[in-house]
Figure 1 (cartoon, helix red, strand yellow):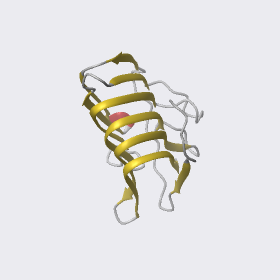
Figure 2 (figure 1 turned 180 degrees about the horizontal axis):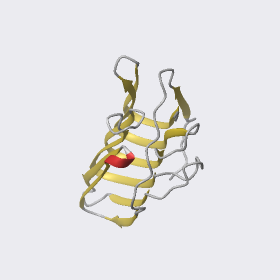
Figure 3 (figure 1 turned 90 degrees about the vertical axis):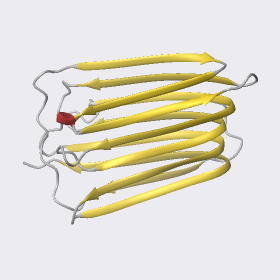
Amino acid sequence: MKSFGIAIVILALFLVGTAVAVQPIPKPVEEETYTGIATVEGVGAFKIRDKIVVQELALNIRRWISGDTGPEGSFARESVVKLKGGVNIRDPNDTDYCHSEQISFSGDLIVGFSKYEVSAFHGGMGAQVLESYEAKELQKQETVTIKTTSAVNHNQSLNYAVMCEFEGAWGTTAVWQKPCKKNIKQRDKYVGKFAVSKEFSFEELVLP
């Protein structure tokens, strides 16, 4: 990613629940692992769609990217996704889901949307991060980790970090909701030419 020409504003949101903590999510009976690695570089039109819904892990993840470089632009992307069903429930660094991505784009238009959710309906803490963008220039580096299968007195967590330099429109929304308990929302949107660095961290203690 090219170095930012202006000072990066770092925004951090650490959300700690005050309501009753989540209950443990049992480890899956079948400890399965999925890994997806993609590298692409070229000129032209592209469409990318990802969907990961695992109810027993309370995960609901959806992503799509589409665009066209036109004859004078370029597109490059590196992406690694790992989904694990046999994590160490006492190790906060052994996550159920991990995603890292780098995108470099110039051209006619790139449009993207991401949703990372730990579903309260399936036993998770009810947190989610949304990202959307529409730009003709984009340099982006993103890392997401989610841990839902944690031991009692350990945390479920969702961590999202992004560095982004763009010309166009880009924004994020962080939401943490539980009916009659809490409703937290933080939304940013930028239109123009910006460099942004952001982090969101959600953690909630698992109790018996």
